[in-house]
Image (cartoon, rainbow over all chains, first blue to last red):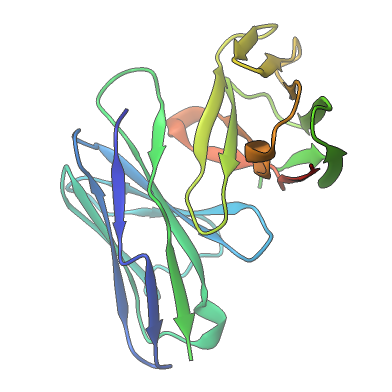
Length: 116
Length: 110
């Protein structure tokens, strides 16, 4: 099946720094990618929808200046957590939708961010 | 926003027992999906349901898309140790967005 890869899988950073997480579709072109956030023992919450070549669409309550999303190519979307704080510590997961009409989404392995 | 109510939140069963979990929604969805998530990893799709009333099996897993399009259930028969994990239902409406349930944490005693 289709493969979506995230990098890094784990990152620890100091408060105030920015962290970039990459989401790549390895064997298909992804017109749309989604970014989710998951707190421990909680469900996945959609943060934003990333469309190749256009601005991301953020869900209500998600700060677009805090969570910068770039989808510059059909195989790569990046999420940058700017000026990270401890409350930004979380598990971030991306998913990608291909060109086919099934609507199936393929999930990355997730990236665990810890802000000290 | 839209929410899915998934139950039970956790289950503790003996190996070999059958498992049943369900999701309900106040909104209609076009597609219902069931995922399994292992610790520290992303969700993996188990079953996708595209039509109201559809009953689909994948090995020991069976899922149904409710007639009202507002609910779905997942059954696991003859559970084995590798079934341990967190199971999420998800509803998909327009624009391919997914709304996830709260998850069901399955623990199996050998």
